[in-house]
Length: 527
Length: 68
Image 1 (cartoon, each protein chain N blue to C red):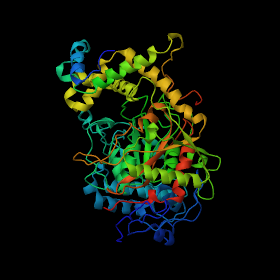
Image 2 (cartoon, rainbow over the protein chains, first blue to last red; image 1 turned 135 degrees about the vertical axis):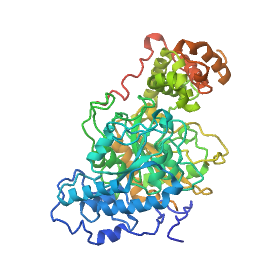
Image 3 (cartoon, one colour; image 1 turned 30 degrees about the vertical axis):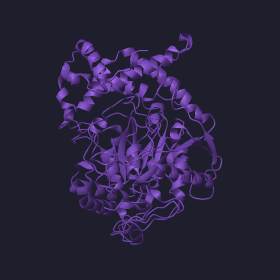
């Protein structure tokens, strides 16, 4: 096997069997073992360490392939220079971006290196800001970025340069990240797709709407891809490209300074390589924001601490994990590989000490054919409220699909929106009642990336419906994590771990425990 | 129960209602509206099956009451 191949995963292999990674140019282990300029700098310990280090060793991989928590440990210990990391990442982007097309606005190299040098100098002076200090980030192009073009893949906003940062972007900057650029998105997070390709197969889509963030993290063009999610725009692409995608409880992260799609279902989240990384990101960007009245009245989050150490023994002892009963909506997945990978994942979760409980979920209310019966009305009404004036004055700046979503919302009566929100309340209470008897539910995703030219993965049965928008409608936290590769297409498989609103750390704990004994999240595509 | 909308009948509805909102033909939906209208009918059916006095209020707090 060459250094640039990912080992085949077969059903006969144990879930913890290793997926090998690429060969390395500047490896993390070599970096850790070698005194860099940073290591040789001023003695003393870092001044800030809001999160204790995770247990674990630093693998011998390319610097840009490190997970955030791994790089953070090296940076904090002054064994990894943010400048070296930025240089390695820029070289990586130069190598793969031509095929992946994740970026719509890559920031200039000199600007990135200046930010990395500033981070490095701060750390040398003893001012370590925390686990995102010096970490590379790509930001979906619907987040406002002060002084940087923000178009949201929409002709409505061509050339728009915000005068302020989204709150989450400001928090990322305060955490000391290195922003690599703005990432492709579906038109205002819902319609015309971006140019981004799926790094596992450049003929396939990463899905949307956080397409550039997904493609970029999977191609190792940065360590954190910031995304947004109204119906699955983080977890869907994450599943398609084999990364971890996390949507926290509604209101955890401010929506201020982000183009809205539907305020009551919009969530800020991230695409990263591991649940640990996701916790670190949300800890940095979460918290009450006076500029967003929909943000929760929680000053700050400590999900990385709260999810605990899951690296050994039976970390899930005492956790009741639900799995869908045979025939349940959540098992209505077209692809047999996805189901087989999920069955294997259940065995792993059980082996980690969890109590497994089979449950029947209540995804569909009687008299409804789909949650779309109220989801579509809520989405269209809310996006119509934001875009009505643009529909009247500049409809030619909207794609037909986007214009249809807006105008549909204009044309339904106001009481229809309220009716949909009444039914949503009924549905939510029924749906979330599963958490009366379980702590976390796990279920397969049903995303296998389709071909850009059209055509999906052949299947003997249809999907029962979206496995993602139910977690937006309910506001509950959900994280998608890789579970292997499909047998024929060799494309990533995925499952979700979800909990009741507010139990984000529990959902992440299950995901982290799974990733502590498996290596699916460490697989990287050949590029 | 009336037959569900399709794109054509939804567009006919849109042509009736659209002008009241200042929408010309070019701004009317060619798709999606049918799904929204049919969803609206399903929501009505759900609520009609509940005695009015015990029917639910809409979601106004977007996460359950146990959170801050």
